[in-house]
Image 1 (cartoon, rainbow, N blue to C red):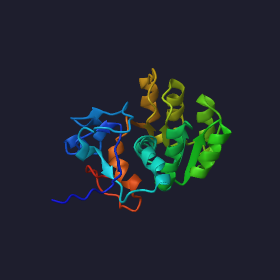
Image 2 (cartoon, rainbow, N blue to C red; image 1 turned 90 degrees about the vertical axis):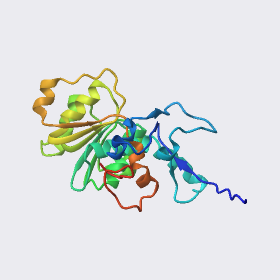
Image 3 (cartoon, one colour; image 1 turned 180 degrees about the horizontal axis):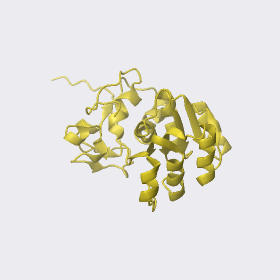
Length: 241
């Protein structure tokens, strides 16, 4: 029996999932009932649990210079994308991104890809501001905390942004994100939280939707790896919430 071996490139995420349970089918493979954490897995060779549900093959073997981009899809790009989706970034929306690390910058890119009309990157670092503008930011805000939230309000006729991505995870950044969001708007938080406490009454009166957590990267991998795919429903292969 002849066996033909084909070099194939596959991408997973920091959670292994079966991609068949009801939670996976709803698009939250990061909370799969059989999930296995893969966050510390960095090796030349790796055994992937639940591989059939976790890994997605590239349309064709990628060129060597594209491999870093596919690797980014497995973590920081997938996380930034989820932040933008959780914040309901989309056409006609103003999106603000709190945080200018890798996840924040890729949330800017995601907001642009999702059709946001205006994207405000909150950053104090010139090199990262430059990247944010290259990725689609239309405005840069350097202020932080209450001053940063006030600046967002100034730029949006006193209303605040429709969508805000929180990509830092501190008390100040979370409060700034909520303060930058208009009533009825959405905060997508993907920054790993560090002793963050939300004031219930403040959240109650804000009328702001808050959604986030560890990114279900597996939900977005098909689209991130092949942008020509058409968005589908909320199934395990779903490309949007």
